[in-house]
Length: 425
Image 1 (cartoon, rainbow, N blue to C red):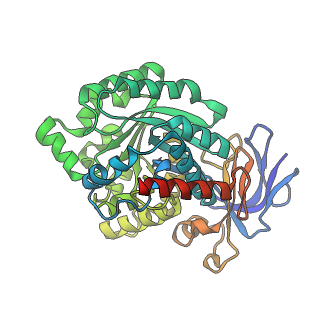
Image 2: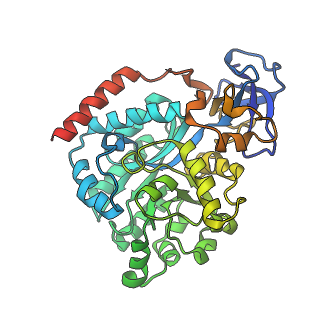
Image 3: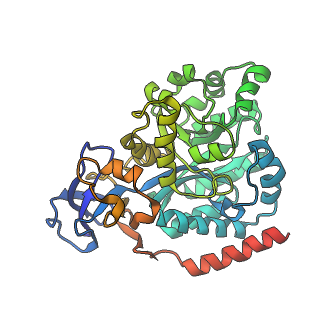
């Protein structure tokens, strides 16, 4: 049986970390956590007591193929960013571009310890094939705008072909946002999702203008909108951003099938604001972390999101206990996995899938890291640069700078050519 040996293990299911071996089975699940050196089998990685093992990180809201649009639209408010720069650039993208952008994102995410992601875009079969070839997990939906039946059909076809594939794909329906999809169309999409036992991935209250629109034009409160549209009844509801969610309404979405995805860096960069994480947590809402796309964030780096989330809310609330490292790591692992429909992912425990990343502690920033403070070191001192290995279902995807499922040079060559062509056109 494959074994990750002699590593300091932490996940959100335990208070203190422990040194041990992670023994996996042929099914890709964790069979046992043993004392260091007691695990028997083929060695996948030997941490030699100087590495930390964490669950693979989850990027719970992104648009991976936007890696090709990185840097095209800088320092603009969201609506200008979308309508003046991003939507026109997206009109030029081909299925081949989408695959190249997705492959480029896989390089970035895997080397940074992200083993699972949630994506909304189009030509999503290209993203699904990229995901499957790379060896990671993903929750996918076709972005839906207006009342376009053709796009809805594409999303349902995506679900028919890929939902549950290899145990590594879940598919949701993807109404883009309340300001791009009419309310009646959202109702129909929610009903379809419930009928087909699918989730819904929705951009939600990213800017103050959206909250003003609900109250001044729609004459309805956000939580009432969700309930009346039937969105609270779907298998999983992923509400990306939620920056302006009225805090007095949060108790109504504190449900096991609802996840609010905090995207701190994208929201800061676009000047959208900051989600009320203190109130999210106090209300019992499940919170996950996402980067948004590389065109708005510039990085697909969940380590950046963890550190930013842990710091910004302390400063805003004048309270160093808000968004603690352990809570933020929970957002970036098991909360994200469950929100995306993966119920046996996100913890390093027997019977969970062996989605594990290994972090190098043999550097100056980890001096003093031990069993009692490992999560704090990971969040406040850690970096995506520290990732030495990534495994999904016990299969190695990345180890000491080498991609084991991807051809880095070929992907970079295609990406440079595609980006150049997009800019020239």
